Amino acid sequence: MTTIPHRLFAQGDALGSAPAYHEKIGGDWVVTDWQTYADTTRQVARALIGLGLQPNGRVCILSFNRPEWVLVDVGCMAAGGVPAGIYETCSAEEVAYILQHSEARLAFVESEEQWNKIAENRAELSDLKAVVTFRGVPEIDDPLVMSWADFLTHAGGVADGAVAERLDGLKPDAPATFIYTSGTTGPPKAVMLSHNNLAWTADAAIGIVGLGPTDSTVSYLPLSHIAEQMFTILAPITAGSQVYYAQSRETMAENIVEVQPTVFLGVPRVWEKMHAKITAGLENAPPMKKRLAGWALGVGQRVNALRNRSATPGLLLTLQYRLARRLVYDKARPKFGMGRVRVAVTGAAPIAPEIIAFFAGLDLQIHEVYGQSEDCGPTSFNRPGATKIGTVGPAIPGVTIKIAGDGEILVSGPNVFLGYYKDPAATAEALTDGWLYSGDLGQLDEDGFLSITGRKKDIIITAGGKNIAPKNIEAALKNLPLVSQAVVIGDRRKFISALITLDPDVAAQRSTAAAPHEDAAVRAELQRGVDSVNERFARVEHVRKFTILPRDLDVENKELTPTLKVKRRIVSDNWAEVIEAMYAD
Image (cartoon, rainbow, N blue to C red; front, side):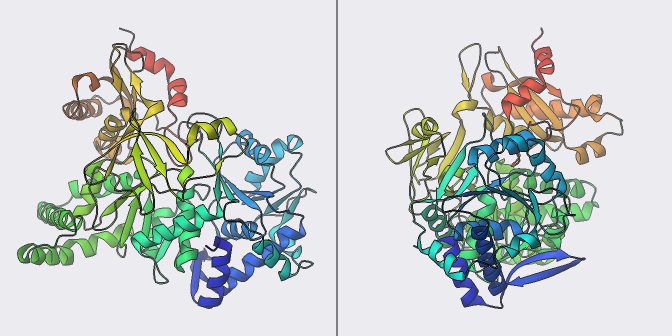
């Protein structure tokens, strides 16, 4: 099995002048071909060797998505090193922790702001020998810092044969990259993924969805996360497909509309925001347009329900579908960038089945993937023709799933990681006899489709001794139009409560108050929504009280990870007084 660097250099030879990736420069999308991509990566590998990178040496990357991120990542692997991404939202203390823990000799940054995070704790970073700034960063007058152009000059004294020698020395079961976990329960751990893990999983993903040179994706989720690496680096290099780099998080939605990708990965929050925007527009639409949309949504849901089990619509439904496509789908989907999408994926966190069903009504079937960094991203996948909404699909081919006696999901396969770097205790807890203990709770149905029922560490045990998994309650609450985030509280408490934040766009439509979270009408609408959610759950799982917070949860206050997962402990600490007030009586 070839490594990812081997595959990139092979694509450079095979695809040559075909488009590999695109970046927006001066208002235009500028293309780079596969030969240039491969040649520049080889140059980066030579420069790293010229700067003293040894086999198994670590390099950190602190940046939003851009071509240099990937050039350094794959170039480092080609030079026999181990790259490690750092989320660009990390604080100076978090950056210092990862640099120290990884023992990185080199770091690459996208801006002076990111450099300042390193500079703040530079005295503690004895392993760090150089920091390289990416293109466009003003010159930084510091002996530790060099520009991208100066970095590349270090390739001059290193022959191509040195890279070939390092490539020949790569071992399939050796670490290829470190993926630092987002730290929902403590300091981030370094997940060691092997060259075999990356290559095998890329092959498996392409085998499921199909991918080729005419396909394109938009790179915008954090590249420090294995999911975005799969969609930006591993699968495109393996399949020869194209990548468009979003300019920033702020322009991401605009860039997606410009590109109209054929393959798209969105975390649940992205799909939820799209859903909220579309439904808000429908609420204000003229009655005739609203009725047409309602009819088309029904047709799309019936057609995709059949497709999900590889069934074919009848003649009447086929005719209705063709009409709905011409009148609604082909006009609506390009407006939010999904006009050409043939594979849409959601993952990294739970999503409400209602959201998936809604987009199916727009003839956009979102396929839910489940997994973690520790198994290179995918464990199971709701693939085309084999989808059950409300589940996360069957195991991907080559992977085995079983459920332990306590309900924990166990995973075995070529995608399971090597262990945590410098953490044998955590490795022993996660890996036993080749099985990955996921920490998630689930069930397998008679067809092998997996449903996630909760996370072991998130289980709430009420004062009455009842065990409650908050995941499904929170997903149902987040499906209410007004809700942005919902965090269920109740551990060692007499009843379940919730902290709720408002979707600012919907709240602005519902309320003209300066503080919508204090608006009685907003609270009344939320109460009706909470009551409707309670009807779907057992009495002990009912949300008896809720508080609307004055702001959304965010990464800056450490309440969300960079991939937008909720850090329950931090939320509980930050809003302790609010929580206690709900139980004061």
